[in-house]
Amino acid sequence: MYHYVRDLKNSRYPEIKGMDLKLFKEQVKYLKKHYTIITMEAVIDSLDNNSKLPEKSALLTFDDAYMDHFVNVFPILCKYKIQGSFYTPVKAVIEHTVLDVNKIHFILASVKDILVLIQELKELIEEYREEYNLKCFDFYYGKLAKPNRFDTKEVIFIKRLLQVELIEKLRNTLTDILFEKYVGMSEEAFSRELYMGQEHLEHMVRDGMHIGNHGYNHYWWNRLDEHSLNNEIKGATDFLKSIGVDEKKLTACYPYGSFDERSIKILNDFGYKLAVTTEVDVATTDPEKRFSMPRLDTNDVPKDSNSGTDDWFLKA
Image 1 (tube, rainbow, N blue to C red):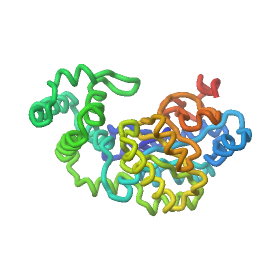
Image 2 (cartoon, helix red, strand yellow):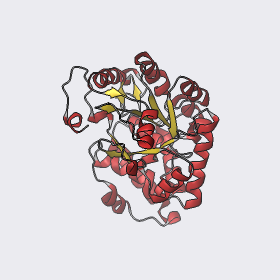
Image 3 (spheres, rainbow, N blue to C red):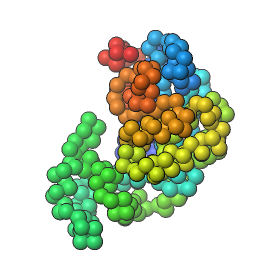
Image 4 (cartoon, rainbow, N blue to C red):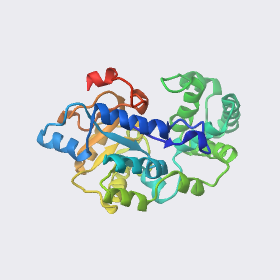
């Protein structure tokens, strides 16, 4: 599972949490040395027809349709004749908006002292407390500030507060205030730099890459009512068909890893073959798990072509 892949040192946002391009090249060499990199079509055939995949197979997936993927990743995959699977949040691509998760990434990458951002959020919560019937700042901080394997408790607090905890209208308001202050670009201009356009995705489809569903709005699917969830999946499905994706080979990647039984049913009703999650594990082609396939993060795999095999290799 990949997200940003760029020359971090020479980019405008060297602090963004992404995969450095040199390390990506090394990781691809490592994967080619120790695994057989397969196509999404091979996975679908294994699920549908019980065809056997090569030992130690690997599938490369890329979330969020970043321009990084077209400019940096696509040429490398073409060079090695490797297929990538790219999961596209449609609204960002065709309406030139910026996903809230990406706004938060670049706010964090633009602020040197995260405690300044924490203090600003404290003041904003107080400012909007009466209008939105909010609890006190300390309540939210105590509830949300829990570190994980990639982020400090302060970063997790900011992400969870602005992505999940508050109601959507207020989340958007606060994120837009901070984005304007710290990033300082119009949303449309930033979006056109950050994401691929429809023509880039069509190009990749023609050259054998797999493009999949990452939602229309990139909402948390398990938080939507059934009507909204159906529209979210249908809107993304219609877009995929419009750019030439084979409707017999539809796949999805749950935004934020969020899904439930309703999500699986709707995907199945639309004819999807599989869906990938953010659960960290080695995937299998057990048909019963086709809509809950785990993935390894890029940070779980060696980034040196000369590295020896790791524990995940033993489990594959």
